[in-house]
Length: 71
Image (cartoon, rainbow, N blue to C red; front, side, top):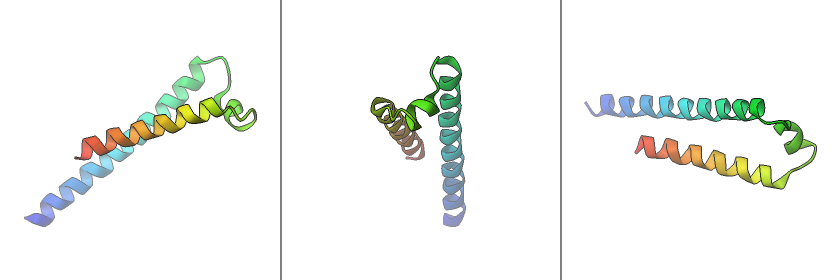
């Protein structure tokens, strides 16, 4: 009985994690499509610190959402 409940929670954890990662990549591609500048160029070539911070906060937000969904 306890193993069944544990496996159910592990399964939902994996599903929420993949869903959060999918949403993260989808948002990145939508931002890339609807902005005039290339995000990849801004991050890697121009080393835009503000954009790095924005994406760092974005990744933290996704992590918090996944953690809240699990608990």
